[in-house]
Image 1 (cartoon, helix red, strand yellow):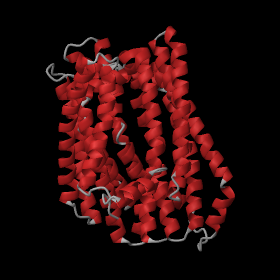
Image 2 (cartoon, rainbow, N blue to C red; image 1 turned 30 degrees about the horizontal axis):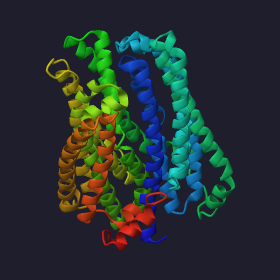
Image 3 (cartoon, one colour; image 1 turned 180 degrees about the vertical axis):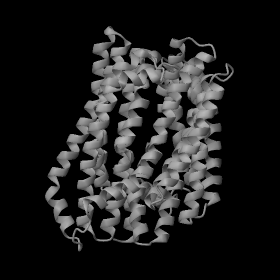
Image 4 (spheres, rainbow, N blue to C red; image 1 turned 135 degrees about the vertical axis):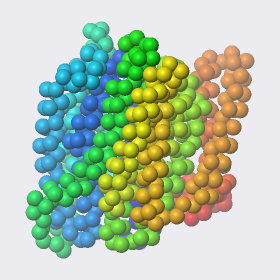
Amino acid sequence: MSKNTKQGSFIKGAAILTAAGLAARVMGFGYRVILTRIIGAEGMGLYQMAYPIYTVLLVVSRSGIPVALAKLIADKIAADKKKEAYKIFKVARKMSFIVGLVISIIMALSARPLISILSLDPRSYYAVLAISPAIFVVSIMASYRGFFQGLQDMVPTAKSQILEQFIRMFTMVGLVVFLVPYGLNYAAAGASFGAVSGAFGGLLILLYIYAKRREKIFSFLEDGSDSVELSTKNVVKRIVFLGVPITLGALVMPLMSLVDLIFVPNRLQAAGYMVSEATALYGMFAAVAMPLVNFPTIITVSLSASLVPSIAEAFTLGKEKLIKYRTQTALRLTILISLPAAAGLFLLAEPLTEIIFAEPGAAVPLRFVAWGVVFIALQQTSTGILNGIGKTSIPARNLMIGAVFNGFINYTLTAVPAFGIRGAALGTTIGFAIAAFLNLYYVKKESGFIIDVKSMILKPVFSVASMMLFVKLFYDFLFSLLQNEQISYAYQITMFVTVAAAALFYFVILLLLKEIKYRDLAVIPVFGVKLARLLKRLGFLKD
């Protein structure tokens, strides 16, 4: 395979996962909007209380396995040891089954004690109980995703993500509508159970794809020149060696959410809020502001997933230039995407939270956490790079350092009436900023890539500053115009048209600055190649 093909394959894998992730996030936004309008911030607070517990235990059961699998399988295939690659998958699948089952049972049995120990709202018990079986199903699903990603085939993962979220959305909304007359605690439990049905649907489509391609997969794996020499014990050791640091790193994220869950409601009460008010404010931060912040990072999550096997392959083959190219490309795209997203969330915080979630109060924490988009995105992309070259413990350690700062700021500032919920948002932003900058230091140290100041800092900052000025002027002008014409839904129309116009304006600025490359557009599904060719003919793009 040629160098250009491999480069294109790396970005194409990210594009496939991004398209699927975007579809999943849109559906995720859909059900959150509907749920928030049905059960309000208080009900979403109860629903959200189950998630930090669930995600902590879920990470323990499965998080390190798919990433470790993707790296190990890519390594073995690059070295033409395909039989060993398949054995690694089979061992990982058994590990996922056993660990996932055990942790699901532990979560179900310890739901009530956990709620008591963490001083959570007792009404969240049924939500915690309802979501516990999902750990078992997701753990098995993760092993199949890791297998296909190790083959650098992102399509099965993409399909399972879409189906998982589709089934989850309908289950959640249906159960919430049915159960809300019985109380917010039961409605929150119905919403939580959507994770179980969704995961089951995602697993089924992976099993179907695996069965359908089984003969082709076996034929491919039989072409390897190796004889299977790995023992099961050695495979387990290798997975644990790579997977444990990845798990610890992934564990920090839900632990940060868990810290927020413990600190925010309690420290808000210390600042003088009632229990129900504290729960509602926590819901605004965790269930409204954070989903908006996490939405743009679907692209960097996809980049990270695609980077692990592609950089692992280049690292195994000793291709230093290819590692530097992929590192540079990934970080450049991360900045170009996350910076305008952060600016948009900051400027349009109030209309976004009011129009989408009917919770305009969430604009307060959103403005403080909006710039965290940039740091979350950089942390995710740099983690994928470090995992790909086998330095899995570094991002885990760096994220833990960031989490300590997040916890300290959260605990200190949230209890101060002048800060309140702003303290939690500020802690999250600073925590991720510290983790991101530490990661970037080690990426530079380990890969030797050189930061292109002009391309990665000056041009993006200029483009975003120009876009922010455009958004301010365009929003005020359009809203005033529509109001004077007494057009219905002027507020909503203004917000959505402004977002679309800002995206187009930013794209044009980057084109004029020659910062968008042909290959950046060509990998976009459906219309990417046609758009890239058109812009190249017009003289806006270069290879």
